[in-house]
Length: 230
Length: 230
DNA sequence: CGCGAGCTTGACGTTGTTCAACTAGAGTGG
DNA sequence: CCACTCTAGTTGAACAACGTCAAGCTCGCG
Image (cartoon, rainbow over all chains, first blue to last red; front, side, top):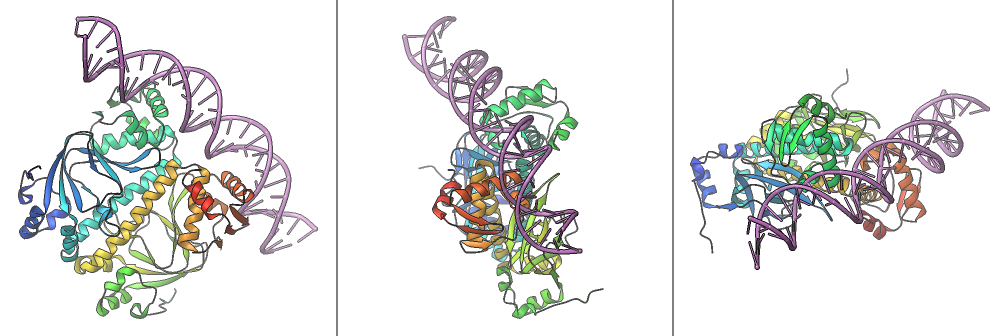
């Protein structure tokens, strides 16, 4: 059996979620005493849709995919990088995870007892306010994805995905993508073959330069135009 | 100028949202003093995507559609009946409405000052907990819709929509639908013509009996089977 | 009685998927 | 170091799903 491992005390942790900034020293101590820090290797399952959500997860380090499991294929909800909470939709109602999460890179995850979260919600209003803010940001992102998925054709959807990686995840015009073509396809709501053709098309038209998993956005304005349905 | 109209005091209102049950007499009085009750006729716009969200809306009576405005067509997020709050995603962050809402039936809506909501969130932890629960239920519904939209064909999606009306809205196997074909199409993510053909198909195969806006679910188990991709 | 919006129907075109074959590269064992 | 295998990725052709266009229908309403 593994020995519980904790790199830092929460108090001095620099990668805290914004809602933890509203906790006092005692409260942070309570978090510390009710968490486990777990390291995951790339490809490992961090949480499984349908399993018991006894803990809220905090992604301290790494990159993960958050996805819904469908009958035959999955739907990737978001690619989430460090500093974000996972499992918030499980806070009330059925205490089960509503999605699965898998690590893309070696990741560090704090498992925080869900009852500690509930305690703070009932006792610390600042914490609740911040939590609601985080949940709402997520909801608004979902709305954008609804529009992308239901109203755009393949190039438009893939343009959205590329801009998402460039702006939100890697914050650069060139990046080495950790996702497989299959994952990219599930994130853009299309088949692997169609994705491959779309990539080729973007590459041939000098919109994006693609070599394997390395992407470089060449013509950003064109990409934005395509995203707005071109 | 219209005279502010209030049918009941909040204290004795029987159609309260679940989060208001955690307010005391004084707090309910505060809600009462900071709300307007507005009646809408069928077809009227209750709130407009992108406009300033100074108030959270409570649907006291009626039936409305909540939808995202796309470039050429809309995407209906949900059909919402009385007892539900509208505008919660606008609570923090940009104070604008992220969707539009239109009445299907004559409806009564309480406009509650958004600052009253924020005040309760910062002072009443029970209220926050209940609010988070409501927001999360909505998120989980969105997940189901993601799977429906991205992984099912037209019959599957329309079966989902019919079951939604039967189970969630009308709670009966037969109902008179307030939605136009166009709205039904935007709710099922397809064109009006395809919707029309799908309806005809369901009707011809004795799965649902349809006469104009009157729907009767004849073979529920078949409908569920189709929903699970048949 | 005629007008018009909403609805239906058929023919056709487009978009995207599926299937199958092929290719490139990474790991394995001799 | 080289053949062997396995998997991820690419490509082409056939096909299915779905949208678009145009015409016709229905029914409420002036």
